[in-house]
Length: 185
Image (cartoon, rainbow, N blue to C red):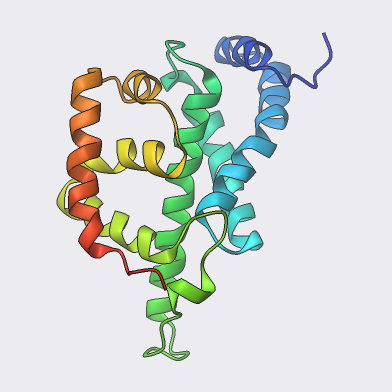
């Protein structure tokens, strides 16, 4: 088998082999999922270099947390959540750096004009930050459903929660986030 695995079955197989300590499988796995992880990161972060940083963090997290994938769902679904979390972590780090810097501390970019990239807006990221602070249980299901369009049953497997609970979390999360979003022009 070549190391250019692209199908979900091939990626799942590489992940299982990597979990057993196969270094070659781990390298092949990271190479195979990198484009997918980068696309996820690009969907969250508006600037290419930020998305690249988040992707690199995601690949490191994938390698370090590989044992937490239990094989109940597709590896690519699990990887998707890791990449989303890495993107959000990168966003928080960049936001904290911007707050700490002296450069134009009172100017904030208008999310309606500067951040609409692949359907993601900075006001959404800000809303997710607020939701995570006040109601962290709603963030991951809401992002996986409303930003990435994963089906409810896949989200339930990924977060290891009953389907009804996931649907309720997403519904309640939407109600909490809606007032935090800026109106589109």
